[in-house]
Image 1 (spheres, one colour):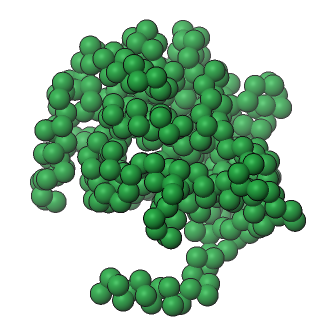
Image 2 (cartoon, rainbow, N blue to C red; image 1 turned 135 degrees about the vertical axis):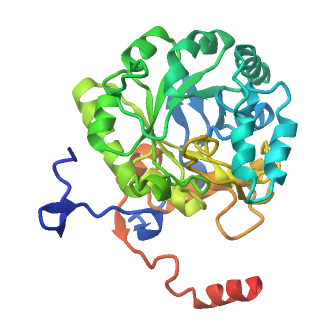
Length: 392
């Protein structure tokens, strides 16, 4: 089922499909008034948690370790530590990360599979959470659905502020003869901290997840630079359309229940313009991976690999090298040292709100958008020629 107001086109006899849009295909229309960027509010709230900037670090081992989570928390955002990752499998994961980053292209998938054979250790889950909290910053952790309920008590007792349950695609109803289905109602009822579920790109699925009691939903299937789910499985929806659909479900659920569920666009954002378009599409916050892998503080110092990459049966990701581009502060809050949109995401968001005449994120959700697939190339012939010349 899709949202009833969304038209579709015929793609073959008896088959119809909707047109979906990504970040490069739309643009925002300036407002009739403008607002001083220093006076707009871009803060994000989830339960008792308030973030000065609405940016989440993705639960990827190439990005988030304890030190990175602390650094991001000190800047006003939050980073998600992967409880199924290297940080909870090894007392000292640094040598394993070096082995992954230095492996040859033909060997890296097997190196990844071998690295993730080591079992997750419960004591490390508690230690990592406590180390982040000891620095006085908020802590978010991520678990696969199959282990989410059994870890819930440990996660809350250790002091985590947010519990993310994350899979390639997540629904409120999962059929399996081999595994016990996770009940989000039970999980949410057993915890006093908010639960965020992901990933989702579908209106009706989002509605059903919201009805289970989750506090937030991650939007995105396969858009990340290190993820190959779309290429391997053929599954995914471009992020502008996916965010708009889940945001429509949020608004409908708010109308029905009076409870607002946060929409967090997860992946596919490379530059500040993408971030701004995600918020204009209806996001309350965004989760970023590969741009943060280029931070000097990232766990891998310039590499990234998707959460499904080490799957021994069907890897759905690849290790990518982004290089160290800037400090985490420069990427998130500036000042920017480049003019390509890869730094000062918070500043870009503030300026976009100001230009569009919006004072906060919720007002920004109704900004006018146009379909504009040539928006990044129109009138930019000299810029493109210069870029080609520099690369040759």
